[in-house]
Image (cartoon, rainbow, N blue to C red; front, side, top):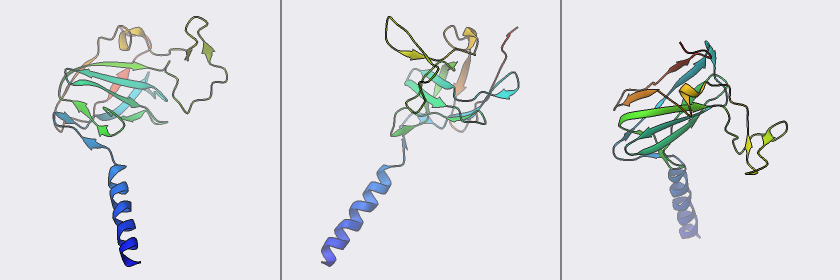
Length: 144
């Protein structure tokens, strides 16, 4: 009986260790805050495109995000990153009520509130370096 309990405890310890994302070699923490015209940009996606791949983050109600390379790997690849920020992404936990569906593709998309200069035609870049976070972005609805 005690072997079963010991074995069960070992499995629980392994499972607890597996739930925390880890850092990949050549990657570092990438987090920060995104604002649009001085207000937190809520429920937006941020993408860091680096030579090591793309990392994604999602802003919370305060405009804060943390980037992840995958479900199990945190951070962003070190080096120069092109940054894209968008509010049109529909996340899995979003309600589809009131969100338009493209009749051609069948995909849902929210209305984009961020100018193209920050997403589809992004000119944003940042140098991702070890210990360089936070990476904050102060966007303007009318860039000038």
